[in-house]
Length: 480
Image (cartoon, rainbow, N blue to C red; front, side, top):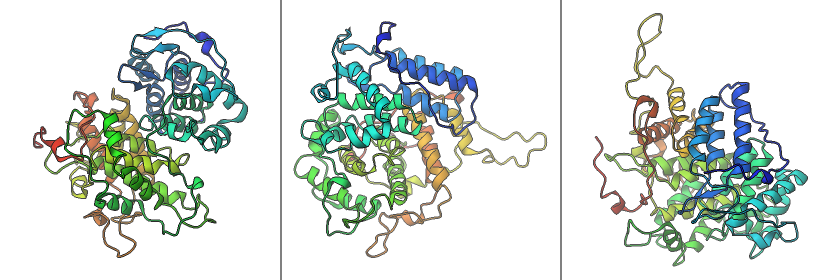
């Protein structure tokens, strides 16, 4: 539970967000979200619980606000999270010990406090001062993430950014999208408390030129499936811890192979403009991440949503800022999940006109049609998703909605990577028939799994068993 004893941690950064929401809002909702975001920043630690969960409150608030949440709904979201979050000055998470640390973190000593969550509050104060001085993008580019000094051995800030299943990246991504320096400062402090991600980062600006042609991402995924080095660790054990899965995914040459595959996504020319094909690569990531989430299911089985794969999709919303180092970590998570293979046929079994149970079009009055699919599917999905208790639900629906806005018009097979560059064959069986309805189909599957809660269904949950292993499906009933 939070307390009122943390007022001294307040910084001078304004709580303002500068982002026009996708759905019309009103002054009450706008002032409410800024007040709640500031309260979260001043009062709450970035982690909680014995299992070291991340504070998702700001993500949940911003995603719901962007999709039209009212002030009262934003207040309810705040209370849902605040009941389990810890005070910002927590120094012993397991025993609930709270103590304000009297220390000064500066530019000359900040690296001495990395990797220790006990220093979150003073790190947040430090990064808040820095972001006021340099601005969010200057801070990331020149000092604390992308600079060579920030990535020396022992500092490793880029690796810390991708630790915790992308959570520091997602936090900073929301801050950059909503133009909130305060949220960026939170993300930097959160990253600094993490130990570096296991996988050594691939980033194109740190790499020498290569004599290899860049490949489409879906072709790289095909090669990942065919790589004998990346065969998942066996035997499957449902009780294996996530840290152990990550350790195994980096053993026996797997980390080197993942890094090799990640390098294939970039032009070999030393004079290449790494931003020139950004638009295409962002589109590739969107199709890739969506297909992983929805296509890792099996025919005639109840759909399941992999908890770790959903973070690839949610993080993809913010990749204009972190594109280079993202892929190697995404490939690692695929390996951690047992290398689930996308099944295009499965994706096509989900309807492209999802609706809550019992939804109908009233035939009274001057309605144009009474067909069951006459309601706009996105309007119905979003109206339900903003009320979902799991923050990942509204975040993934928001990501899919943005994807549909950009790529929903796509004709079958007319997206990057559908066909192999060397022989024109499909990169994955049936992918030439896939079109822009993928995103609404996936959104419908998400709601089917997580529950149409406004229509009386119980809230569902994400799966953490590793959907790539066949044995992970042994305890599942047949669909229907």
